[in-house]
Length: 635
Image (cartoon, rainbow, N blue to C red; front, side):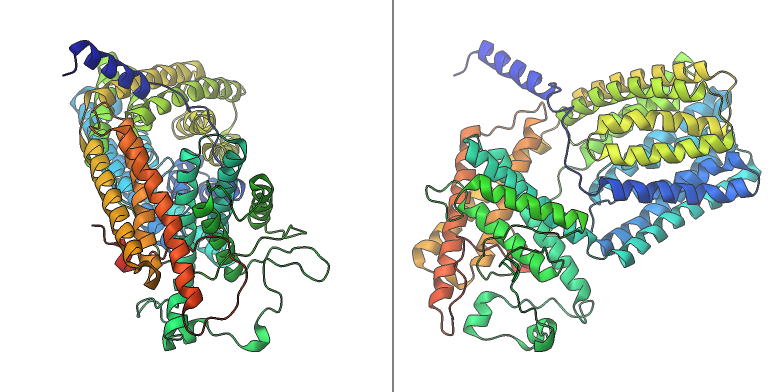
């Protein structure tokens, strides 16, 4: 029986771990940040142009609010992003319309019951937007941008006659963002696939670096596994987009096993057949006549690179890895990743060949807890707005926006990091805002500065949220100044500083107060699912049945081990004890990766001895999982 002092010590360690700001200043990889930022700035400028041409520069704010639709769904495949942005455009237009209508009816700038009702409506919009964005798996600023559109429209002192024009301007800006996304889909249809494959190459290279340096590989291996599975999903999404009749018929995959046992199916022959005259003579991955390597942009070459990543992933950590020097291969993978992102092949080192493998079919990962973060968002924004109203702060909705920005997270630990990033970013952003407002720029200069800040925001926020806040703070102030010019810029800056500090503090209190066990339950279920998937794989290997369809077992086990690590991280970020032994989680993860390598070897040996199998390239150990619909079912 544990003593109470040990319980208190464990709780203290847990609290220190949850409230630790470690990692708040870390930079993330974002290879597509600059093109995305340029497109967002262009959309903002185009949306703001009609109000300036008609002589109503103050109304450009609402067109810009609609154009912020373009910030959603950055990593999504083109087809899904087009659908998502259509829904976000409607939601953003609805937020501006509802905010304008409530502002015209209740006049929150006059205080009283009307202002309190607008605070309550702001909290409801924040919670609904958070729930919808989490369910749709939209990262980035997400719900904060929808809440920003609602709050600015409600506090811009609208009249009943201005509600419809402002709504139409927001709809026009949102439509511009949607059309820009559609143009990107037509101009660069392979963009999401390129970046997903490049990210997989970078993460596997980081795993190889960790192996070469002898450092712990747990986190690097998890990131590499998740990135490789995401790359396979991106490839499958593009394959279904280009496959004839993919909208009306289920996807038919031609795997290595079906080719060698039954021959290619008629649907697979129709989908994958290519005339001999257009088949490439040089196999990607082998030197050309000049002895150099050229990065191919074809889906086939992208699939070979992801296959190589999977082979390296399941072979990492073995005593005799077949890929030779880890550091050397890491450099080769990074060179190919840079060539993919820049769309400039150039001379590249040769990739080692990988085995002929099964093609995956994307499986949607499990959704984390949704309602608790939304509840925190409602409580935090409502409390911050009410306290700001009681204290008589000018622009009190900024307190609600700051609380929403901190609570736009998945657990208490990420909320703490967001609070640190928000505090530091706001302090630096206020200095920048004072410098700009001190020049007393006119409406056209304000709009041009907003466009420039939008470009810097989208470029920086992909690397670190705190860097994005440095540019988000002056952007919000300039939009407020453009919508309703203030007599004193200093008072505007002070209101922003006070509201931000109040919102950050109250958001942290709400995050700590709302304690739940959903993350702990998720961790226990993930551990049980991983143990069960490992047991099934071990039984199949013992019975000699794994080679018949290794892609199914690998898919189930790979998805289970990724979910295990994510569930463990989510549980560690909450105050509620997970109730699982970290040693059990570590053993289950190591066992799963070892079995993935054994499954790959078993599948390769069965395919090598199957009838009709011819000689092929010397493979690296392992074949990638096939994330088929049958493999998505969890035990």
